[in-house]
Image 1: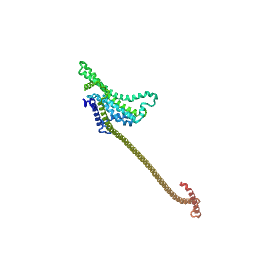
Image 2: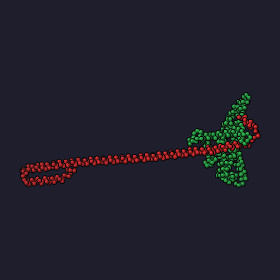
Image 3: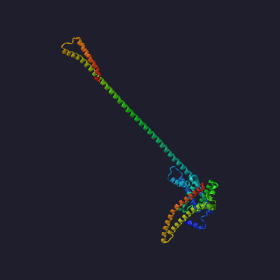
Image 4: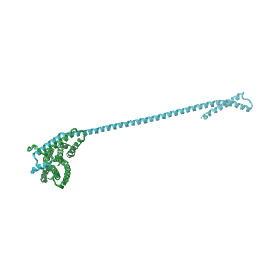
Amino acid sequence: MVFFGGTPFELNRIMLIRILVAVVIILIFTLGTRRMKVVPGRGQSLIEVGLDFVRVGIAEDLLGKKDGKRFLPILTTFFFMIIAMNFTGVVPGLNLAGTAVIGVPLLLAAIAYVTWIYAGLRKHPGKFLRNALFPPGVPWPLYIIVTPIEFISTFLVRPVTHTLRLLMNMIVGHLLLVLFFLATSFFFFEAPGLYKLFGIGTLAFAFAFTLLELLVIVLQAYVFTILTAVYLQLALADEH
Amino acid sequence: MLPTILSAAAAEPAHNPLIPSVPDLIWSFVIFVVLFIFFWKKILPNVQKNLDKRSELIEGGIKKAENAQAEAAAALEKYNEQLAEARAEAAKIRDQARQDGTKILNELKEQASAEAARITINAQATIEAERQSALVSLRSEVGSLAIDLASGVIGQSLSDDKNAANLVDQFLADLEHSEKTAKPESVN
């Protein structure tokens, strides 16, 4: 399951899953919007509900119409890429979330980081960093404390938590499911006698945690996207 | 499938999950760029175009409905106007008819009273003629009667006497005169 081993383009299982996800996303959205009608059919309605969720619920809600439209492509890509890659964690046969390895969360968090800093610098050139590090309205001696805290929380902790929140949720979900499925397999096929009954319990837990994972999948995609929008909003806000 | 992962994980136990490998980043980046361009250049403009078209259609529909409503209101107004006109016309005709009726009635009344007056006048004329003839016959009869009576009273004929004839004439003239003065009263 490893192609181009040893080169920078090494394709292991998780990379293949990610490529599969990208292909599926492109297929679904291409087919769903192939013949856009003013009065949508069932398929088009579903696609529109998904896109509207990001457009109205996240972008326009937090950033307003104008900025919302500006950053809509990046937010839409974030949301659907994360939700689809999260989803592979509960797809039988794949069983591994594309976001459960640090590459995607780190890359997306870095893109978000660069984007909101760029947006802030462009909107308030010069004033952006000053407002971020020296919040107006604070007596100047307090800057000795406030400025390092602001610097660490805004420019260091923010991208790290942004990455780890998604990554850890997915890793933990994956580990839990693997644990329960392996335990079930062990109890059913290898444990002696009545120990096999434990398998029923572990299978039930696996089922319950799969449902929980479904919730986490949607929630984490939403949280990651909305946090990106919030960072953008804070950077674009006229006053801090 | 699961044992594969476990063995893979077991094979590199020292690998820190927080340190990304180069292929991991490269493939993530490629996939992100592909999806980003896909959404940015293809899907979102398509969807936006469709949304614009839809809102345009809805606005057009609203406008059309407004126009139709205005037209209906205008038609209603026109209809009401015509109705009012028709009502006024009917009232006018009714008044005219009433006036005509009154006029006809008055004319008839006038005709009837004229006829009545005519009949009355005729009757009076007849009565007057009757009276005149009665008077004439009465006068001659009364003259001879009086002469006869007087002849009887005085015992001799007065018919040949010139004086007697004058006396009688005188008396009758007086009588006639008094008759004429009393006449208007009798007419009325």
